[in-house]
Length: 367
Ligand code: HEC
Ligand SMILES: [Cu+2]
Image (tube, rainbow, N blue to C red):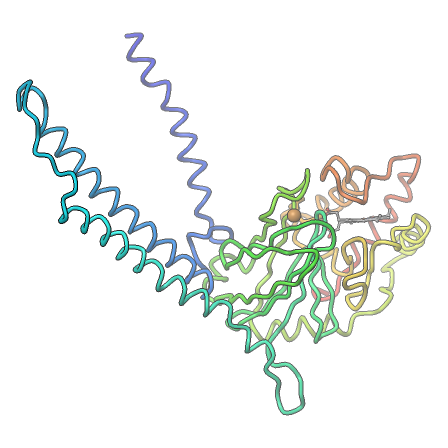
């Protein structure tokens, strides 16, 4: 009875594991549910190598089982010496040629895909007027936030990357402090963002697959970069080409100095200046690419999360609460980030209320 119980002790562990692994299948996050041409190619290569590995394991296991069954001592007797095959030409040839064939089956598609994915010629293509035809986004990774600059459109955002579906989007990636890595598991990557040189690649966001993911993919930093590395998330909002054009227009027409929506927000804007927030944060989508020390806050009121991690799930009260929590306690929420927190001595509760009112009103395209 006791032994029987012991056996079952592992059951909760396996149940828990099954639950955890079932989380790997989310369409907005899973490299196993490719949502674009680049991810599909990477997935196909993974599948190919997995199939080859499984075939090898099965063949080896079969030979292994046959030999231990066939050559059991009980069966062949104490003093039998099996046939000696050392130096056998036939065997040597088999175990040299078979792996070479397997490596070739793996290498040809891998090298082909590498060249296709490295092709950046479309990025430089221009129309009759000399304007670039492809969409280019400059990505800058910082401890622990992301900046997205659309150089040809004059737009800067942070934390939320906005892209159109069903066309190639070209990325120039760089880091301002230490090495990070840009990865959108469901759509492709990852590619290192280095401090000293710029890397370039492209991604393709499939419109139908994007809808299955509610038009919101998750991006991650994939290179251990510091204590809050695991919190260095960003969101990717996908829009149909028409919606994307509307977004671009709204961002381009946004005020350089957003008008506070009421008196409380107007006081908040003053606090924003008094406290020096403005030294690190731009509040207009046209400002700050590559130079600002903190994320551009122009669209803060309509971002899906605060600081890339606090998900308010569309609940405005929670949204406000998270903004306050972040300003008071940034240090605890993301250890090691350069903003730090503002306690009651630095910033009174009234000023915090005003500041939050002002920040909640920073919206560009959802109004
Ligand atoms: C020294 C520069 C610096 C100062 C000063 C500063 N911040 Fe920040 N702030 C940052 C950085 C860096 C981040 C991103 C941290 C992260 O996500 O790792 C950030 C993030 C934020 C965020 C979350 C942004 C988002 O995209 O969700 C808000 C809101 C914010 N700051 C508000 C403020 C306010 C209000 C003040 C003034 C009271 C302020 N900050 C002062 C550097 C600064
Ligand atoms: Cu990082």
